[in-house]
Length: 402
Image (cartoon, rainbow, N blue to C red; front, side):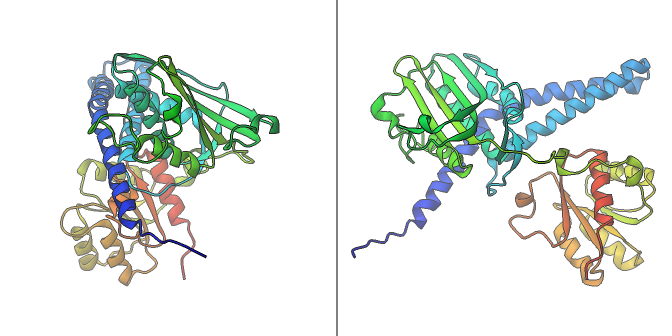
């Protein structure tokens, strides 16, 4: 037996660095368009709130103003989530998602990404397209395919993003080494750009392979797409004609759902069941967020103590020795004591203390890579009152740990 061994640790590390750099470059390209969209959304929110503040709106107008402000805020939250998703280093987190919903969320960003010289059209499958996927990775996959099509149309052109389903039988598998029989969800990205020569198609998914001039591409965009598709147990096919355009077909296994998935992964509850009388300490450095949390909790019967930082919360507990049932804390706060550290410190003397930690960052970034304390609920901002109160009640209703 003859064998060979090569240490590729450094190569993998460099590849990850280049890949992250590529993702951040994409975020930079998106930033201008996102700022434009954010300002439009803020205009909707500020305009409607000003109407309510002046007290001149009729009841129907007031209801519409509240509804539109809420929708605009949700869209703003989605924009922020997408930017955080693109720049993250988190592992794949698979869950049931509707491919149509992911593509719809990405459509606006795709328009900002390609510029005004390229017309984007989307067509969606008439029903839901359930897949077991990481939404952020699917968004990254679509973004890379769109960027690839944009680069193939430097003078402008047309881009079509389409979703659908496809049944493959055994007779359809021959001649396609990656295909297999079954029911699959399909994502197709079609451009009318320069096309790909046959001799090049065989190499386009290879890491660091690029036909672009030096400094214009890393050769990792399509390699990343290929890797994401493989992680989702699917495959990708390419059809291209030089001078006429290219279509990428992504096939992912159709997910058979046996039970309805509750929204946000939390079962709906009667609002009255969210009330309580427990004692809660809030540590939050943003005054408006702190006041909003206090108002929401008091309205539902809870007893609330406030602190502007982790250090102030520690001092309050040491001096006053209050009875506490729950700690709600932001993770990243000034004063040298983070929410994570506050939780660990208080549990030294109150091991049964229940904790909810919040942050505007994702979980990994908020803790700077440190492990989250055990038996903690994490809430990523922004969140509405119902989700907040449900998390509070669910945590308080958990049985005490022995």
